[in-house]
Each structure stands twice: as C-alpha cells, then as structure tokens.
Length: 501
Image (cartoon, rainbow, N blue to C red):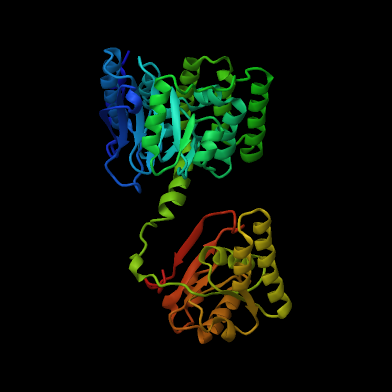
C-alpha cells in the first residue's frame, strides 16, 4: 500500500509544469489568552492574478505542514490550527493543466486519493481546525475548508463555488460527501449541480454564510484579525457554534431527484458528471464519509479519463484565458479607443449586436437600414431589451435611461457614421451585397475607423478586395444568440493590418 507521500511523489513526476503552492506554518498567541495557535498560509508566491492551485507537489507541501502541526497538537503545544490564503485568494482547486496530462486510470485515481488523504488529516487532528476563506475559493479550495472543524468567510469574497460539474468532473476531494452532511442535501444540490450548470454561477461571501457553509462572516478589511478573535472565543467556549440537524429522510431523496431534473433539463443525459455527483450525494445520506470519499475517487478517475472533461477544460480555458489573452494577437498598444459604434442593418442580429456594444462599451451606437420602419424596429428592440434588464434588476433606472439615450437610428450612413470608430455590418449573407455596403461605408467613415463584418462563411479577403483601404477590414463573427454565447471569432483577411486586428 503506497503512502500519501509516495502517491504524491509519483503524481508530481507527471506534472512537470506545476505552479507550486507552499504551505507556510507560523505560530502566535491568540487573543483573549486562548493559547498558542498554528496558522497555515497557502501561497504560490505570485500575485492575485495567478490564483493558488493544488497540484501533487502543492498537496505534498500541505501534507508536510500537517505533519508538523499534527505533532504539535499531539504534544499539547498548540490549541488549534487555521488555514488561510494569500491576499484576495484562498485557493481555487486542482491544477487543471496537469489533469489534462494524465493518461492512465491509476494515475487519475492517485490524484483523487492523494487529495483526500491530505485534506482528511485536518479533520483528525487532536485540536480543532479552522478555515478562513479570505478570498476566492473554488473546488479543492472550498473542500480543504470543509474538512476543518469551523469556517469563517470574508464578506468581500467575489467568487466561491464547486465548479467541477461545469467542467465535466465531480467535487472529488470531499465536496459531494461533506457538503450535504454540513448544510443538507437540497442546499448542496444547489451549490454542486444547479450553480455549476447555470454557467458556473459563483457565490458571494454573504451567501456562503447564509447557506451555513461558513459559521461566521467578517468584513474584508480586518478579516483575519476578526476571525482569530472569533476563534479564540470558540476555543474558550464563549461562542458555541450550532448547526442545523440534517434531514436524512424523504427530503434528502427529494433533493437528489430535484438535482436529476436540473441535470436532465441542462445536459439531457449527454454528459455524465452531474449524474455521478448526484449518485455520491445520494449515497452520502447515511453519513458514511469514507464510503463517499471512495466513490469520489472512482468518479474522479473515470471522468478524468473521459472526453467531457477535456472538452470542458478546453472551453473553460478558451473563455477564461484565451478570452483575456488571445493567442497570436498583436500588441495591445496598437489598440485605439472606440467612442462610437455604427451598425449596418437593423434586423434581429444587428439589433442584438447594437445591444451588446451598448452594454459593454456604453458609447453611442447608431443603426442604419434601408427604410425608417426597419430602423425604428431595431431601436425599439434595443429599448425593449433594456426594459427587460431593468425589470430583472440587472440595471437601475438611471443606467437604463442612459443606455436608451445612447442608441439611435438613421437612414443616411454619412450622418450616422462620419464620426464612428468601429462599424460592423450584419446584412444579408451575400458577397455582392456586403461589398456594396462596405464601399458605401468607406466613402463616409473616418480614415481610422475599423470596418467589421459579422459573416460566418464568406471570405473577409474577398469582401475587402474592392476597397481603397482593405487593411482595416476584419471578421468579427458573433455566434447566435449573441447575448448567450460568449464566443467571438476574430478573422484576419490577407491584408488586415495589426492595428485593425
């Protein structure tokens, strides 16, 4: 039987590019004379733009820190152990770059087992353990805290989630087994299944506390200081944390059934992760945590070897990383500010584009079309969509009024586009029509304006070929419906210059 250290050493050899997280242990006297305390800080040595993750070497570092505090606790040298993160970040889970590299089921199993073996030790120390969620916490970052006796959360946390099902995994280091046993199956299904399948919805600090995941909440400015005062009061018996009795009867089964209904409505049985997570939640009803951990290990290994996870990670990286730092993009310093947008066309696609530019850039947006009725209909669509956002509380009345005032429609392209910095066409998908439109726009647009086409299939090079300045034409293809699909395809024509791109 391999030890945890051996498991992690073997796994680390498969993760050559791991950004390693250290686990610093420091000691101090708690307030109120509560005694000597050990605090473990998770830190990868980089700023908050590079969140802390858990790869094999990182888990090994935490394991070594637990070795130290375990001995101190057994020897009576400390009264408690805390875990927290670097500024703005607690920890955001497993190192997914490494997960993609795993090729064998047994290697994937070792990652799951290694994480469990390290985290479980926090629940078995001779003294109480505390997780201080000081910043963003996701996946394994949330789970390491679930293994602790108590948890506090910062009111300033912007993102807290178990996003694994969204990626094609299950919360595999205790999440599926521990969370329903802490806050009840129904709330756990909301966090693990519903939020994940709802575009990876994140919780804020207040919601983490309301759900009962955290026992106390403090403001971000002096979060750790207040958490340690609270810790001292708990250890001295001045504060007693009471948690609700978990309903292990019909309510548990109903929660799992609700989760299956959500999964069916979102993925229709076509992706396994949500169903595997629900099976583990269902099996956790009797409170046998070890059985739950074993099931998590198996599910994790099976899913890591499957295609859905790799597709999920690809899509996640595309939206989260490539979206911010596109591969092969020219130097950002070439970019010019956009102070006005023109949209050629006022049909449904054009109107959706107008709404998107309006909401993202908050600059004047002008639509043109061949008759006033179409122009009015396009502007009306945008106004109606803003009213819907107002009704849902997504914008306030002032913002709604401001956005509506920024959108207009005209028949004359010269009037509409003479001072536009960015002009996009969304007209009929026919080369001759688009070439004519671009010739008309080029005649009236400023020399610096970008001319963009929303075509999905026609040649951007051919479209620009009859213009005096084809270098400023670029493909700017949105997927339909524009408001829902976050993918934007930027297409370089043969003569598109770097500044336009």
